[in-house]
Amino acid sequence: MKINNIAYDVAVAGGGLAGLAAAIQLSGKGFKVILFEKKFYPFHRVCGEYVSEESRPFLQSLGISLDQLKLPSIRKLVVSAPDGELLDAALQSGGFGISRYRLDALLAGQAKAAGVHILEGTKVHDILYEKGAMKILSQHGEINAAVAIGSFGKRSNLDVQWKREFTLAKGGKLNNFIGVKYHIRLDHPPDTIALHNFEDGYCGLSRIEDGLSCLCYLTTANNLGLSNNSIAQMERRVLWKNPHLEKIFSAAEMIWSEPLIISQVSFSNKPLLHDHVLMAGDAAGMITPLCGNGMSMALHSSKILAGHAARFLRNEISREEMEKMYRADWRKNFSRRLFAGRSIQRFFGDPLLSKILVRTARIFPGVTNFLVQQTHGEQF
Image (cartoon, rainbow, N blue to C red; front, side):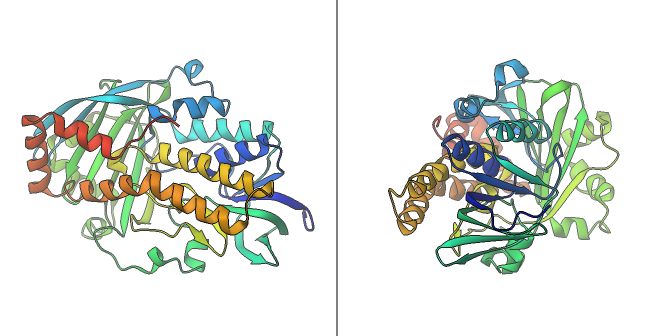
């Protein structure tokens, strides 16, 4: 299929939460939108699959009937230190669980219904700014658009090709993590999200739809290397030192024969623009998973971006003003959260620091609520 010489108002590279939500909003405002997704819906992604309540009104505004889905409501938090010492706390705002397999597919359906041209199984090779317009290159040729949105996730071929700064950074406290995710069946409280620490990592457990749970953990590439690059060996050698994780892995029914894995995960700062491409979601900045708010941030960033892009497309502001306003609003809403997430992550995965945090929060319950508030926002 060739689509050369067809002009769009907006081209979106990446069909995750931010990309799909931005496409739905801009198409709903009357603009011609095309979205490129390298895979085919539905499919799984490495993600903790917990959505904070701040996103509920926005998702409903996009046409997602959350009440009809009967999703698990999550209102409690459990945190364990590597030696198993536990902290129990109530989540003031809370959230709900839904798999990316389900949510992304629902949003893709809403986007198609809204008139978005979705090209599945299509990889974007490059995005260029030429003569006041954006040129998107893929196997279907090239198309022109007034606005290009980069929502291609944590790390993509374009990040490497463009030599974005975080791809050049050496492994450190904010770089070179791996993420591993399972869907499991396990008897545990459906209203509780758990974060279990282990050496150089932590593992989240929370309920999603259909009686299943998402088990997702983050650790260093070094941990995997010291385990002969064997996920199973690393889990037994490292994760199982936490008695809660040993119990979970021993009792769980694994729904998949193999876990989903991503590597080279970075939490370093990322530029919001590249040659006039507007970044959204994880492509703009990734909050540490322990904060449980990455999905909400991706959705919120799409709302901010769509608002400024719409004004530009209506000739109400210039491209320079659109980019300046988007950068300012993004930083206003998310810079504090990202900084807080990076700071809190330093306690998780460290046996001594995580134990100190758990004990302090047990003595002073307000500490937990304060930390949660630093990584969450108001409804949008």
